[in-house]
Image 1 (cartoon, rainbow, N blue to C red):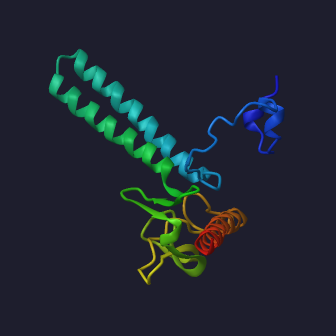
Image 2 (tube, rainbow, N blue to C red; image 1 turned 90 degrees about the vertical axis):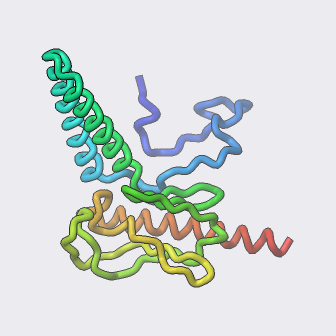
Image 3 (cartoon, rainbow, N blue to C red; image 1 turned 60 degrees about the vertical axis):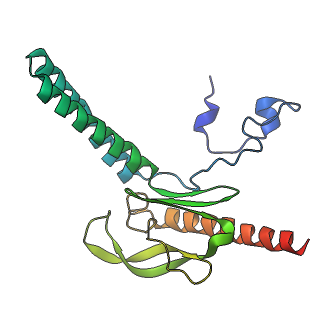
Length: 193
């Protein structure tokens, strides 16, 4: 049995849905990550979820021994750890027809394409896997229109998505720059009409 959802090639939609069926999300402005999530990010989230399971087992043991307050503390720690693991999986740049969303671990910035001044790569010292240690690398710089300060660097050549994968970083940066350029061109064309 073929597993079509595992392939990366884009088969014609008519082949999957039939010629007279509409796309399942046609017309919606769903955000998507224009690159694959990195193995370091998946591994870190998996370790956090494994830790969550151990904490939940500990809370069960505490509850069975009659220590309800300790069990509730451990359940709270497990919930926070699971939320952190899921948030870690969402970190990155997401694009849609309407704009760009930059998700970091503790903050999110959403901009319409008209508010994005420039998207470019920049050679500079970047954090290695988000740790305080810096190394020379590239970062995707997103500048707000109107001369605002650039957003924090979420995509770098040494983050959890692109460590030891410089070609993947270049492709992701090119795709995001292409979305921004297409949105600017579309915005200028709609203003001229």
